[in-house]
Length: 320
Image (cartoon, rainbow, N blue to C red; front, side):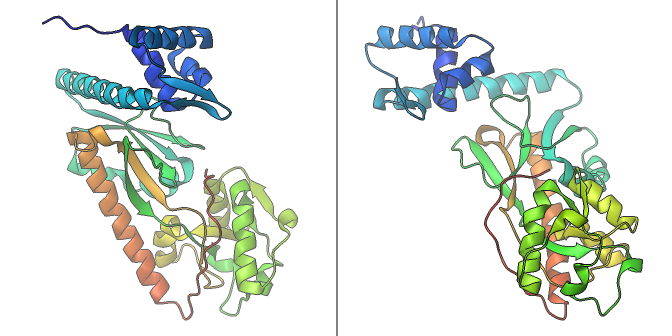
């Protein structure tokens, strides 16, 4: 039988506006004017004889009719997207995955391990993009992303990677067995912008007061602070998930064995409709196994400390 469908452009305009909660964001995503988006939605509402979206102070919200229709349209678009991806994967000899991660987790943790994935799955081509911000499923051509904090979207599936835990780290020549938190105040402290509040949390917990970091070295990224610490330039605040291998081997040492938890846990996310696709499922299983192995090493090392107090400060969603 023939299908009686509204304009595809109108459906795309409605879906993008409902998902983004904003006409302007939908317009940017679809690369059209806000006026065009509004006209498409008005045509749909006229065709159906009911209101689908209402404008409120914080943006566009769905009416009861709009919410029911949005769920149907979203599922239909996801089915089309999934079918198209399956067809494309069948026409390419090499499956490809595009993954957006924060720069630090890419350079400090994933890069040294990625050859293991290629050894297990040589037919899967990975495109890793290290960024200072979270990837966006709605605007980026991306298959998976790493986020600080769980996305909390019904169309996104998320797996826990790790909870950040911090401890001062430095080259062995910069410390001895009698170093105290007070001693660290006289050292050259290394930090990136996002670490300033974590250094303060660490000092408040370890020494009872915050720290003035203006005398230290401010660097552009977390990876740069670790590079400077390895070279002996000063003391960095190490994320144990990233640094545990170097700590165990002695390339980095921990002058004061006090661990502070800070910020939200990190998650690996993909669209829920795609989580069982062969390439995505293979990478998910592999990276979660690697993360579990690293977390177990961190837990074992902390358990062996002479004292291992920990505290949690308020969540932060920024990363680098």
